[in-house]
Length: 380
Ligand code: CAA
Image 1 (tube, helix red, strand yellow):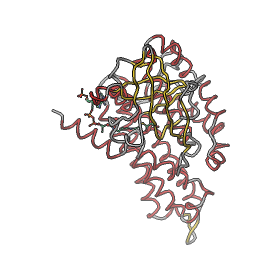
Image 2 (image 1 turned 90 degrees about the horizontal axis):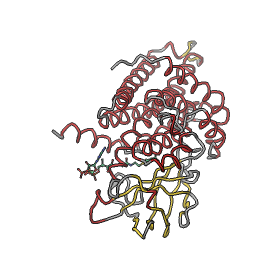
Image 3 (image 1 turned 180 degrees about the vertical axis):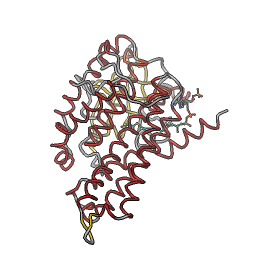
C-alpha cells in the first residue's frame, strides 16, 4: 500500500483547493452566521463532478477513485465544513448506495442526476429513538399492492429539506428485527412526505439538518433498493464508506486549525517576539501536525482498502474515530494559540471548534466506532 499521490489525484486536490478558496471561502462566514444553505455552490460542485466523484461515468459520475474523493473532500472542508458534509452525504451515503445496490432503472432515474449534481440526495436512518441503536426503527413501510405506505419520523437528516430524493430506512417486518428493515427511495414531492423541524445547530450551520415526517406516504415498491429485509445491512455497509468521508471532513477542519495557528503564531508578538519563538507554541504546533498526519494515513489506508475491494469497515471506523478527535483537539489548540482572539469570530478558529464537534457524533458516535472496531477485532 503506497500513498504516493498520482498526477490525477494531485490535479483533483489542487482543483478542489482552488474552487474552495475562490468560490466557497468568500461567502462562508456570512452563510455560517445566517445559517444559509449554499445553493449556488452546490450547483457548481455538481458541475465540477464533486457530487458523484466515485460513481462510474456511465452513471453520471466523475469515475474517480476513493483517494481522489478523500483529497477533494478534505480541501472543501478545510474552507467550509458545511459544504463538506453536503458533499459527503450525497457521495458516500446516497450515490454509493445506488451505485452498488441500485437496479438499472434506479440508476437511470436517480443515480445519474444525483451524481451529476442535477439532484441532491439525503439518507434517513436516525429517528427520535433510533440513533446509535439503529435497528430500533419505528418508521414502518407496509406493502399495499405495488406500493409501500410509509409512516414515521426521521431525525437529524442532512440535506433533508433541500434533497430531491431521500433514501429512507424503514421496518417492513418488525418481527424480523434487523432482517425486517428495507431501504426506499422517497421523492420530495411524494404525498405525505413533510419536512418538519429545522435544527438550530452549534456548527456546520449552513448545512441543512431537519426532521422529516411521513404520513401515509405512498412509495412505489419499484423504489426499494435491493431485496425486502436488506435495508439494515445496506445502511451499515453505506456507513462503512460514509465514515471515510466524515474522517476526511474532520481532517480538513484540523488542517484549517493548523494553518490558522501557523500564520497567527508567526505574526502575533508577545514579550518582544513572535509567539512562534516560544516552545509552548512550537510544541502545540508539532503535536497538531503529527496527529493530523497520523489520522490522514489512517484515512488513506481505509480509502486504499475500499478501492482494492478489501474489507475496510474497521479502518473507516478507526479513521473517523481518530480524525474526529484530532479535529476537536486541533481546534481547541488553535483557540488557545490565538488567546482571546481565538474566542471571538474575527479569526475563524471558534468556527473550527463548532464545526469539528459534530464529526465525533454523526455517522456513528465515537463510542459506536469503538464498538465496530472492537467487534471486528474480537470476531474470530
Ligand atoms: N456490514 C454488513 N453487515 C453488517 C454491518 C456492516 N458494517 N454491521 C452490522 N451488520 C449486520 C450484522 O452482521 C447483522 O446481520 P446478521 O444478523 O445476519 O449477522 C445485522 O447487520 C445486525 O447487526 P448487529 O447485530 O451488529 O446490530 P446492532 O443492533 O448490535 O448494531 C451497530 C450495530 C454497529 C451499533 C449499529 O447499530 C450502528 O452502526 N449504529 C450507529 C448508526 C449510525 O452510524 N447512524 C448514523 C446516522 S446517518 C448520519 O449521521 C448521516 C448524516 O446525516 C451525516
